[in-house]
Length: 559
Image (cartoon, rainbow, N blue to C red; front, top):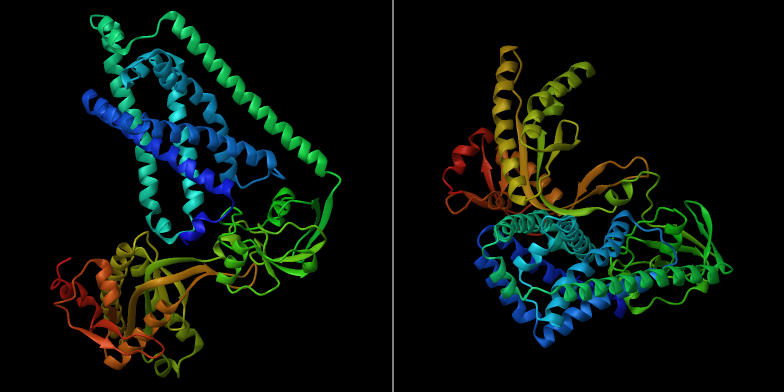
C-alpha cells in the first residue's frame, strides 16, 4: 500500500510532495504562533529556529518552488479537466485552494518580501501590529483556517486507503481541530499584549527601530507589489478558465456512446476517463481513492467494446492483479473510451446513497459474542408454537438489554441464540464492552431463572463464546435487501468457542485476545489451549462455569 501512494504521473507526485512541504511549514508555523499563549520569548525562539531552515538558500528554494508549483499544477489540472463535476470533498478542497492566494499574497508581501527588500525584521509582533485593530486580522485568521482545512482534506484523500490512517483517524481529527485553535489562541494572546504596548506608546519608537519599520514609501512599494501579485494570480485564473473553455469547445464535436448495463446510456466527450464520463453525466460511480487507480472500487466489467481499449498500463495492471480481477475487468478511472462501450459497475449505488460505501466493506478489530440456549429443542418439542415464541421473546427481553446497555448490538438472531457485535472506535473499548455484557448476561440469566423456577418451570442454560479480531463489515446481499453484517475468521472462531462451552460444561468461553485487548494480563488466569474445528491456529481461552463470576476472576489480573 505504501508504494501505491506514490504511483501516478509526475504531476500527481509533484503536487503531493509540494503539498507535504507546505503542510509541514503550516504545521510548525501554527505551533509557533500558538506559543504566544505562553511567552513572547518562546514564540521568538521557535521562529528563529524555523528561520534557520526556511531562510537558508536551500530552504528558500524549496519553499519558493513549492509555493509556485503546488498552485500552478492545481491550475494546470483544472484547465485539463474534462468536467468540473467532482465529489463534494474534492470540490471543497479545490475552492479553498483557489481562495488561499487571495489571502496569502498580502501576508507574503508584508513579511518575506518586506524582509528581503527593506531588511524588515518580520517577527510575529511586527506582523500582528500591522494587522491588529483592522479587518485584516479577521482576513488573515480566516486564511489560517482555510490553509489548514485545505491541507487536511488533501492529506486525508492521499492516505485514506491505508490501514494505519483509518486506525489513527480519530486522533488525527483531534489534532486537526487542536492546531488552528491553539494558533488562534496564541495570536489573540500575543496580539493584545503587543498592541497594548504600541497604544501606550512608551516603547513604540524602540520597537519600530528594532523591526526596521518600513517608511511610507516602503509601504507604498509593498502595496504595489501586492497588487501586482494579485493581478498575476487573477490573470492565471482567467487563463485557466480560457484553457478549460477552449478544450471544451475543441472536444464538443468528438463524442462516444457509453451504455451501463444496470443504468443509463450516455454520450460523452472522447478523451475523458470512464469515471469522468460517469461523473459529468451524474451517473453514480464509486471511487474511494478519487480516481487515482489505487482502490479499484471504480472497476467495471466490459460487456461489449473491449477490443477498442488499449491493454492496462502497469499501474492499472498491478491494481487489477491485486484484486484477482477477470480479464474483462478494467478500472474506470484509467480507461479512456474512444469507441462505444457497454459496462457493468462492480459497486453500484443502487439508488441508495449509502449503499455504495457500506457494500464495499471495511475492516475493523472488534469483539463479538455468540450466545446459544442449551437443550432448546428437547425443552420445546412438546410445546405449542405460541409457547415456544413466548419463551424465546421472554429470554431475549431479559438478556439483550445487557448487550445494548454495554454498547453493543445484536447483529443477527439465530433461532434460540444470537450474534452480538461491540462496535467501538478502539479494540480496547470493544473488548471491555463485551466483557461487561457477558457478565451482565450471566446476572440477568440468574434473575430470569429464579422467575422461571417460581413459575414451576425448568431453568435455562446457555453457552457463550467471546472473541476479538479483524472483521469485515458491510452490506451483504442483493441490491435493496442487503443488511449490514459481519464476516471473517473471527466470526467462525467465536462460534466454535460457543460450541466448546457445551463440551466443557461452562457458561462462557473468553479468548485471550479479548482479555489482552481489554488491558488484562493473563499470567494469573487459568487459560487453556483449545483446538477448535475449522480454526487454523490453536486458541487460548478462559472457561467460566458462570459468566456472572467474570469480574471476580478478572480481579486476579492487574488491568
